[in-house]
Amino acid sequence: MRSLPIETSDGCFQARFSGAGLARIFFPDSPPEDDPIQEKAEVTPRIEVWFDLTRRAIQDVLAGRAPEVLPPFDLSTGTSFQRQVWEAIRSIRPGQTLSYGEVARLIGAPKAVRAVGGACGANPIPLLIPCHRVLAKSQRIGGFSGGLHWKRFLLEREALSSFDFFAKNRSALRFERQETRV
DNA sequence: TAAGTGCGTCGTT
DNA sequence: AACGACGCACTTA
Image 1 (tube, chains in turn red, cyan, green):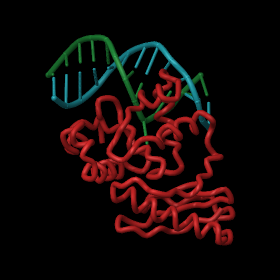
Image 2 (cartoon, helix red, strand yellow; image 1 turned 30 degrees about the horizontal axis):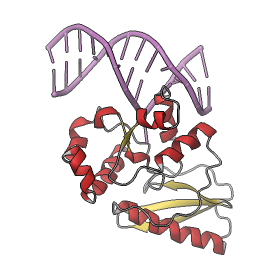
Image 3 (cartoon, chains in turn blue, brown, orange; image 1 turned 60 degrees about the vertical axis):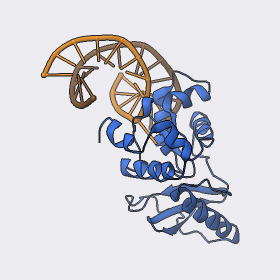
């Protein structure tokens, strides 16, 4: 594994790569990891390419745009249920949102609503697997493992660059009003 | 509207 | 067996 910093105008993210691809993204100022194993493996040419794709993709999402190209993902840590959830979430476009219940239905497990929430929390690649676009029913904010401020921030960025979103939701102010708890 | 309680449900640990 | 990034059906202010 190899971790590399990704500087953006919104802070310094950390990207961790395995031999198979991008394995994990950390938000700026996230608590330090205990796992020092192989964290500084050699930066191969392949990883350099993935790093570059990751950096551009993150910058796109931060600007409210859909990335054109993505690095390969290493999702081997996930269970098959979690990977189904993550795959479904990848189909949500910027400016669009789904509820946890809608994601559950999409993967054919309509009652596993809470489990979908759990899978969102276990998402190792936030931003690029856009779990911030999954809200509680009727547009309440729900939760976010990286901190609710990041979820609001990303949704507002995408709202500003998506006419559809405004048509459906009136305004991003809804996020402030409808969140269940801070 | 807002805030609180209780319960069904199911994947994960 | 216990715990949630849920959703629903309720009360109470």
